[in-house]
Image (cartoon, rainbow, N blue to C red; front, side):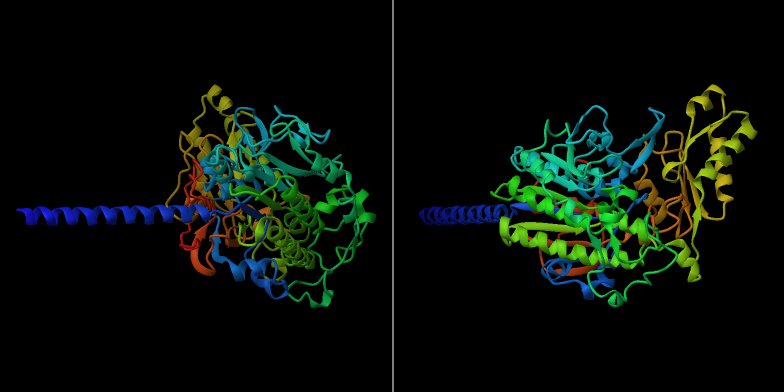
Length: 561
């Protein structure tokens, strides 16, 4: 009996020792995971960057920008958007919230609001005041965004001690990335009567910090009113088409869309500061401002993780003007590569090499100019949406003797006037069917889908249908949605040259996804990843809650174990 008691005591002792040791190991592992949190997360979005801009221009990139991320970090080569429409506002919201417009509510850059009966912008907010400008361009906030971003969750996790700053030439690029609880979002005041200053809104603060006032008062912005010529000998730009062609927009004051561009001479006929935004120097200016923010906002200076979001918008503006195949587009990316190198060097110096984590992606891609594709015998086209709007209302007037039943056709969605439909006791289902048949009669429209009585998108199962459902918000989206043939986009006065984007085709959905820095493995994959996986991945790296509407999943193969 004593022997058995002795064995029991010995076993109990060693079991307690084992549990204590296990607990210590678990505690040490938890502590190690905490210590692997970066001091700063930098989320970089390059507006309108197709995936093949990585591979097409790879040999001309230097080692410190895109190649540094690829060689030291992880390259997701098969990364896609999983919804329609592919636009800037939805793109930024999806990247940082980890979900699609179905849940975060940003269904376009603009959309028709059924309550206000007018078009609204995805970041407009007339309840706030402009800070740093007299223009209305500062009356912006994230109020239309329905979910949190990972930056919001980091703020909550750190008891609001971790900072979040959003920076972009475009207001929506800065605001939707940083989220609701950001310390600040800053954007460039260049449109209309803009003074070329970095501004914000009273949603964030009552006045600009002194460092921004100093930056605005400096000659940094004015210094970019200079010649834009190719970075290297133009004859070496063999990855692009001829500089002189018929597929590019011509700046006022020039006879052709060819190098060089004297921005000082062109500024007053082309929107003044707007021409900086429409050149690669807009990216350089954004980098200047972001590096200044690192010091002034003391980002990454302690062990509480901060978040800095940087959206490079000039790539989108150059793309819209000149297109996918332009020398101007290639030169913009080669210069952006140098700006990324400059940014990473500043992060090494100011935060510490190995102390920060970066991801880089895009908010959408772009297609080749339709006329260029036609010249190569590839089907493409431009569709007149203005004429469509008139055609549909004429059809319904003739059928029901009620005028203006179609209120909007924005984002390839048809919005009906439901008040008129109810007042005239019209059959909504029948009306949708008539309009759908009319839409399908157009040569350049490929598919048409209607919604149910409670505005759920109807239609069969399939990849395209799933993308449309992911982009459809029950309260904000329209009654009918239609899809163009491949390589077709709307015909407007400004996009008959250059490019556009909106679709679920691969040219609009296949975009880069690169990670590098603290906690990131080195490698690559051809496994499919989706844009909504980014926020959960960063959240998992930080050990924080996922954004509250997240539908993506962490990419565990990216994170060091």
